[in-house]
Each structure stands twice: as C-alpha cells, then as structure tokens.
Amino acid sequence: MKSLKSLIKLFHSNGNFKPRKSVEIRKKKGGYLVDRMLSSGIIQTNRNSKLNQEEFEINPELQVILFQFLDSGVTTPEIYEIIRDL
Image (tube, rainbow, N blue to C red):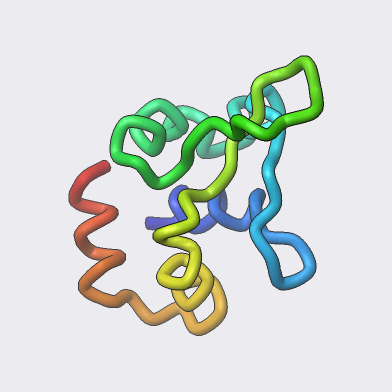
C-alpha cells in the first residue's frame, strides 16, 4: 500500500494529477508496479502528449477515489479493490 501511495504522489501536483514521463516514474522506488498499474487501468499512457517521450497519467475515472486516498489516508472499498488487482 505504501508503494501505491508513493507512486500516486508522483502524479499529484498543486491539487491536481499531472502527466509524468514514463522514465521518471519507472526509476522511482515503486517503479516496479508501473506495469501492473498499466494492466489494471490505474494509470494509462497520455495520448495528448506533446513530448517525444512516453507519458503516463492517472485514469480520469479513478482520480476522485485516488485523491481522497491521498488526502485523507482512509482506505475505501474501492482502494482495497485496486490493491487486490495489483
């Protein structure tokens, strides 16, 4: 759960989730979870990227749930389901 939270924090900036470069995400401490998060749909590739490098973004359908998880630290049933899928 700690590594999930740390990876989600990488996308969080100024109260919003921002796209991040795939290289930047993979080299961080929880980077081994990136492939699992992609396959489970927590993060997705950013198709609107203006860079030549691949970018990841948080799935817009999960942004509210993940923001509440970061903000309050309360583990909801949706978060348990996400963790189970990993």
